[in-house]
Image (tube, rainbow, N blue to C red; front, side):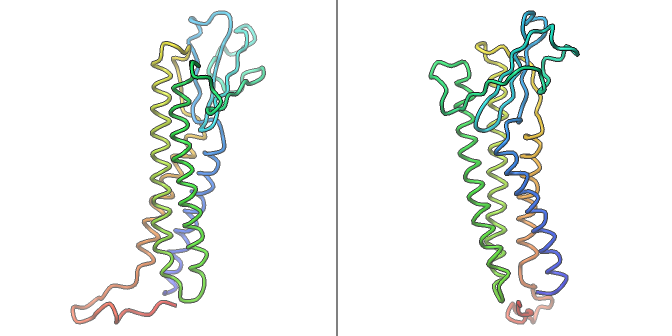
Length: 219
């Protein structure tokens, strides 16, 4: 592998590393979306909620205690009441969230699995004459990015279901920083994986009379 090609591979791996960190942050945090009711429909108390792949947290405080009258703030005063999706009652009003979040979390676990296998291949490729392991590593990273994208779409549908449901009080929402981390992780992992695949391929013949065997050997 030439020095120029090696530099490109390092840049692609750095982008992938950033994507891995963002994916981990998105998976373990609970701020994918913030839900809130209209103030005029909730005169006594404000019940805002934020959730992630594993649980949903709600905060209920008197409206008089909110200075800016913003019921959708994720830093509302008072304690959070969090419920894990696996422990919700069958008749809970958050059942639709549990169904979608379990699916999204399972897909995210597959993404982490692809990341682990890809990282093992990438580490082994640093040994002498094992550059070919970068190619399966790149595909694993691209698959991990696709899994993150599917998780993002599943959570989007979860938000839409909860907003449209008559069993919940939330009718307003916005996506928060965990959702942004997941989207950025998808872009970096998928595009970084494809770039790593292209950069790790051997040099193609430049003339009609050359063959792939004439390419420079990989070191």
